[in-house]
Length: 534
Image (cartoon, rainbow, N blue to C red):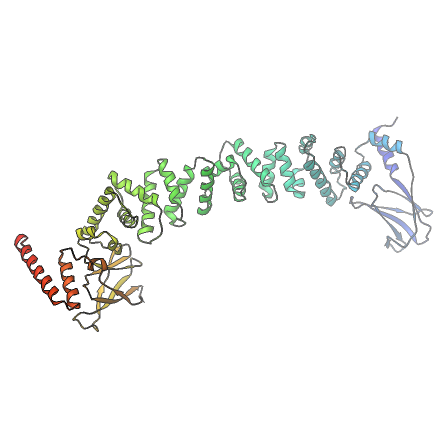
């Protein structure tokens, strides 16, 4: 009766072959199996030598008396010493882990490319032998992974996963290894592999499932590697609600990516408040990438976000709009208007930005008109005058005594010194006389100078800017009387009456000049009588 020891010895004999070579130059024979580290050598005795040949692709070399190896040039015969299918099957059954049997059956399965579930244990056992070439072990691992990847219903995978060298398998095919672990619910092991070798090459579907399960296991506590994997999935446009929720709560990175993340969270109808708060804080400090952030601000405001953060954003966007003349969307001005109506404290830049916005937004209701007048009166008290005032309605301009003003505005660094040089044409002054005046920094680098020009007059001016010893000269510009003021014939202001007299003089209409002069003197006398100066 055969026992295991006897079966192992017999299996050794089953693979023993006799090599016979009649050449007198043949000294020894060598057998090389590409799967094994060791090389067998046997010396010829009476022109024969015995060696073990386990695979069909084993290479036989004849060694001559000079020690040279020859794959060709010598005639030799190979004869298997033992033949017998029954004995082969019996030994295989009793000693299934015999190295010879394992190598033979593994190479046969690979040669036929028909690897089955029965072959996998042989592949796994052969990996345990130290004499097996590492390159062949990698091929075995690759075949094992490919088999299980293509045969999802084979339930032996879970058992083998617990005995595998997972790192060694991951080095062969990280993508398949991680996906198999995730499929079997071994997410901790899969996560460790991805943390060590990186997510590249792993299918996005497997990464999303891995991240989702890890998020649930960690109870949403922050993990840098988990955060990176969630970010990796999001960047590659593959994520689920769990991954997105984790990013919304934990991600802190480039502004453009946070905006994109916020958009995705809004589409999923998730809670985006924490991310909105991060975005607004970053914007307040960096003052960059402000485009399309108004909707984020509006969403945060509707959730009753922190008032100090909302105010900081309003100040920032108002400054961008009013001073830097950047485009800003409606939600910002709607919130400023609500605060003005409620009587809440707002910064001057917010009020100025709201005033400018109202002059550009078309039809205004009575409440808006009242707010505008209030801000205009404040500007008048502060001696602030801006070029956009010229777009105000004539009735407002008359009320604020701005009808006769032509405004020159220049924007630059508030630290600069700005001068205006100009000449007047169509006046009694010598047009060659150059006037120089200082422009006033009305607000944050907005320099202004206003003039009263009458019909027929023309000013040619140049602006000089000086900063840190450098001077910059602008191109010449022309300033003319305001057309809307010139058309206000029915208005009985001093400016309009003088303007009409200038018009009549230019047109050489003496009767009109006399009429306007008489009317002017009459109203001047009435004003002195009823409004005496004390």
